[in-house]
View 1 (tube, rainbow, N blue to C red):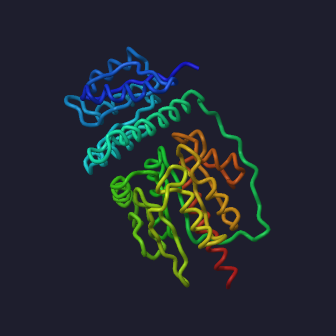
View 2: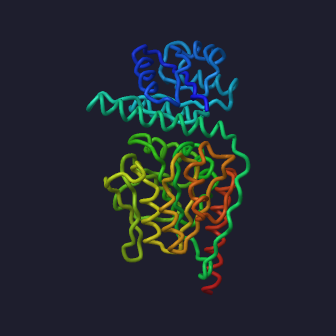
View 3: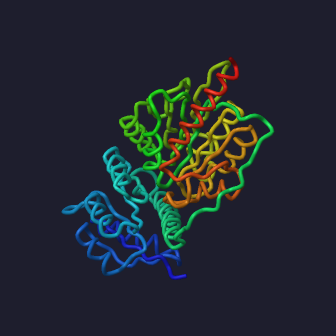
Length: 357
């Protein structure tokens, strides 16, 4: 297979050189060219025909967001990774870029701490994301095979909580799902989106503005109630524990799982332990396999798992891994998942209430 061809776009010659050197360490990647601003990037895309573009956000002239808009008009399927600063302004601009169609993002090396460690972090993260996004594009996935439904000896339980896990492509997927939840949604929602600190708070704020539910970043000790959506804070695992008749959020800084913190497995494991069979777990687009072991815990407890299909996923790593493990109950396109969550949560609770009467 030919190496993946990458176009690096950044107004800093130093950053362009650093990224070129970092990517040169991998034989499966070649830097096809560089550009110093958005106008140059558009011209260089036509010249070099890259498999993926890394795009700085803050550039003179045509900035990264403006360039992204033009790239999406001219090259709608070309993967674009935004390269942004770990600041509130950089995080907000990154979320704007994801909403406009960027495939993913990588945070620039921080000014604090070891420059060598920071460079290794960027190198590892950027190379993994390049290979995942380029590999997905090369495969050009067709319709995913439907899994064999699994059945439990237990009657279908009512749903008392919805737990969602996602990564690459997640902000847009979460927007699509959360926007479909009504104001009277009958159960709480807990979410892990792989993102660093600050990004998760801004994501919660954005989702909160799009729905009639209350969307917040998770806080230790908060009690779960219907109509609430909680997003795990960046760099912290989020858990749910039962205390008497109440369910309470926990936040911890335990070691990473699946190279992630927050990790979907941690959240899913905790809701399975706390809610038993009354869990609906949802795995959306994302790179890697985080959520697979947690889905096994949910299934073992009697809960159900649904996943996003391959065609509508930016990367079908996480949901695909759950399907390959034989853990999912159904696969749905993104446009249908929110409605399916509402249907399952509302219908099951109505049936359970009627049975009690």
